[in-house]
Length: 586
Image 1: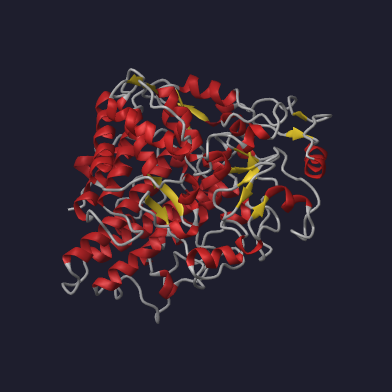
Image 2: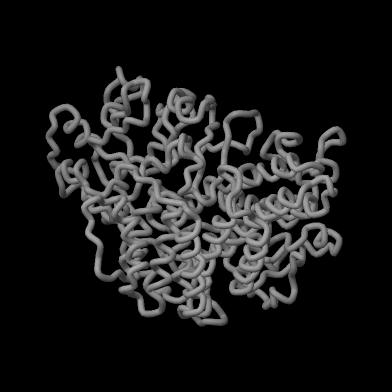
């Protein structure tokens, strides 16, 4: 967690005014810069001054977002990757960056919240409350990531108080249930401050309420069995968003992830990146890690070998070495094309200046793509989500240019479809199935958007929703956290599910793809799946919960944090804190 970040976290600054690199975003600003003591003086300053919490402090979590959220879960593959092989340890650089990012969000949110709370009377109540509410939602989101990633974590309620106490190198971890209580406390306060409708793209009351529903769904299993009261709370808050927010799902699944729909009403909470400026950390660079080399003109894509897993392909019903291309070209689930590229797929919204993007032409046609020549993906597919396309597509989508490792595509963290499935799952209660019409309607809305000929079922089961969540939210940084929450009460299911995944690669795909491109013949000769690499030992990332006696998933704190504060060691258990009597935002 880099607890020594606390030494600097008092000095949160509006990034557009004071910060220019990823190395100094927690440093004290120079004397000629605005800081928290002299900036938040007007409504406009308060509103603008919260804006950077939607991007910059989260920047170093971007790689952890897909490595933790997707590679650990078996949705993404990369050769010799610690997250694919469950060999992540405290020295992992991406884990260190992810941890530091989450804690910096909390530090910034605390500091900006207190600054706006004490702003002068020239700030209206509406602007003050809205801005403070946004700070609290981002703080809650950071803690939500922390508790699901590391398990027991410290609670830093007020950075200034921690600095004054000098306890930043001795603070203790807090039990998981108590961390969830703290998140609930924080979101409850945020809901009292936020308007029902905020400025476009900004978090409102219903965004906070949707997140609260998700928090309760996660919290429901922390005692070792599903808690009916928590499930009912999750359903209650999800129902409120569904019934009262006025928001609707977009008609076309793929449209959710296009630049022009960054702030669509389906997006309840998102990282709002921008390439329209000079502030490093304010931009999205996921296309660089997930897009194939040459996908844009900036020389910043290297994602040929980071690709959808074989297991995820099969979850969509695709078996590359057992089917003909018609099986995926005509697949009825529209989410498949919006998630991964496969032979025969064409994307009209990428490379619009060239008439659209043809996956196989990009791989083999040097007139179409100067760097073409060879199929590289070890699983035979490549990613679609988090890609914006080429420079023309970026300007067409949002009105300004991208640049090297700079784009403005939003990263959706909570979508309305998630709230629908949270509601459906919560309504299954502790029995694991339901015939409740409203729950079936919520599930049906999500699945029917993806599969137009899908018929409304008479009942839904927990397993139906578990499978649906994987397809709906693939590559959105969430699948691992589904395993985490289920491991609280049913670790055996999680272990078996992960161990049975196809987490390895295919052999000799290059010739198969080239022949298909040149002749149209899909003929399996010497291709195969790697059956020799054994399944990872998923228990390596589990710890026995002393309160429930069950094993749960967690990642180790970065080694530097444990060295600074031994209380962060995995072997050290957290302490109980009565959150609601200890902390207050009044």
